[in-house]
Image (cartoon, rainbow, N blue to C red; front, side, top):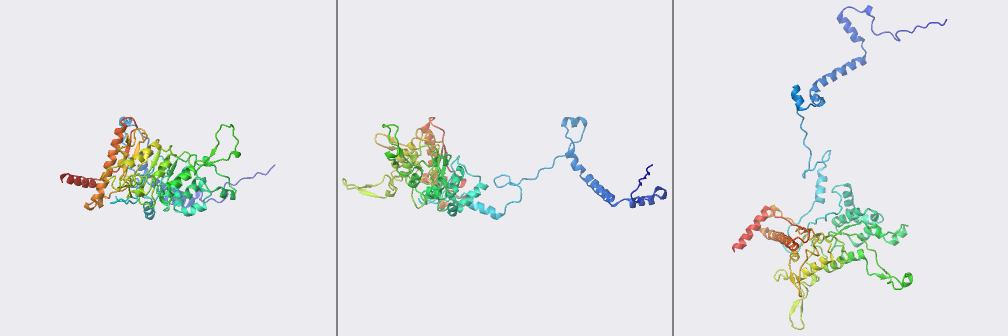
Length: 495
């Protein structure tokens, strides 16, 4: 038979004495039990005691949160105590505009001061003479612009600041950007880059490098009609009259004179068919938003004659900005020129507008005729920005006696679709600087506001339900400035 193997009951000697050897004394039995427990058991008991003490202190605070909610009616029937009120939430961090700040510590003061000094809108004081400085420009509604402070905005601003280098190193990549980013890039360059957007810059962003450069690096040619088919806005604020002329813009968008294709290079389908004429492809076929705003203090001048020539091919425009433009005149350099008549021998004004035509004679004939021609060409406008043009906006509501007719701007027919007309001054009046010495500035500012109000009343009267409702955007006077204006006008009445 197999030998029986007895398994030992303990693998090691017991650490506690047997019951027969224990003393009957309770103190000795307690000490023996304490010495008989292992270190792990002692640590576990210590942790359990600590958790129980903490739980007892916080049970009251967590009881309200863990207790199930009871409707007020049942609580009243069951005579349950009212639950404790919730702790009020801490105050939220908000900026000066009331917007919630992102979590985390606030940015350093150097960052905030730098962003405010670089991106803050700057106003100039109202000029005392005809030489104007920088004015504020408002963006056209509906135009894509990245959110201020976003990654796209910071990247475009960085490119605009380094535009002299970026247009050289990235000349083969700028025209490959999405269309709305290219429009935003041109707007940033025109605003931030001091020299402004030039003709070469527009060609580089809108049409890419030349065919010879593309062929040199083995790149495919560019189809302009497909590349710019979804570009709807072109913002050239501050560049026109400084680094770009209207003539250059006209030739860029529509090309120079059309060239006739030789007859031997084409096969006619019919003898009666006219010979085909090959012209340059329109660079921006779907352009609807155009900003030609300028700085009144720019050295180069703009031409209303060239604007009329350009407007004849941009009939699809719906929004136009002419902020800062001078008074409408086809011969602005001949304002002080006079010629002698060979028949009468008298000296007459050479141009259509003289130095005293608007001030003394109240003659707005030339300005009215130019604006009337412009309204007939741009009959689809819905938004017109004439910020900083308060010295000649009176021509928008005046009439002139022509040959067997009365000339005026037709706000019910040609410009009957315009719903927003911006006639802001572009300048700011600081209340802390208003005193008797700045009385002339305040009065001039008030005259611009009154003229904008009169133009709005004239347009609504002319339309009288036949056109769309129009809103004329204008400035407003502070209480201090209004008090100065009222006091001065009362003084003039009493004289």
